[in-house]
Image 1 (spheres, one colour):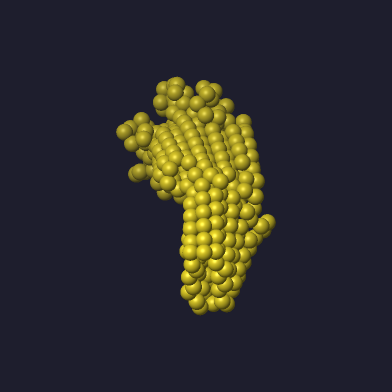
Image 2 (tube, one colour):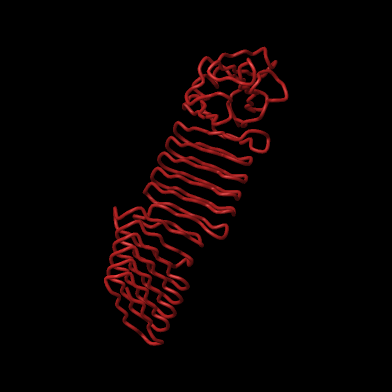
Length: 335
């Protein structure tokens, strides 16, 4: 183990086989950690940092720096300037705070993550992207990505792969595009677009707009009431889309709602489903209602039109004939 400091000039600093802490200070320095879990800090100047083997932490500092993580689970932060960062083997984390920062990874060399403070598109062989600070945009690649927003209004694009997009607390736009994606709106008024593939959309809190796109899509609701009622733009019975009610049916267990029956007399011109596969309050069964006049879907834990009814979502642009729109395969529940 060693702690070494450079000078104000252009230094070459080599570590040991232990866990070293190496400081370049000013100048254009070359710092190599070699074996061990090392901490390398370039300081000012255009520095080159090489972690080597071990789980290393590399800080470029000011200047246009080049960082090599090497083997191990490394943390690479270029700092101010336009930096080049290469992780290699291991599960590496990169800090990107300049639009001109470059991240390079090796194929099948771990699950890697970029923490971005600017608009950013993942390069090849990097799996995950987390956005920080402001209302920035994040774009995936052809891999199975996880894209995570922050507390501001973010835009997330999954592109190829089976992606997971998480919106955060702002008014976000999430687009999965190709393959089978999972989209979580989070808090806020979000816009979720599944795109091609069999996608799963969670509007979560807030009045969200959900569009599954092509494929057999699932729209999951775990929050009810006007403040959380979402709009589904393209629900299709023919495409085998599904509305999933999660954690809002008393006494339910995972599975399909069995024994749904149609009764057009309960709410006049509205449409009523009563399910024997789950229970509500007291001895009565719960009710799922679809209003053909406005497309609203309601859940009533005690049946009837009483004050216990809560709004789940609104179906936009669907046929009014409930007999051809919904059946027992269109609504499922999970605990």
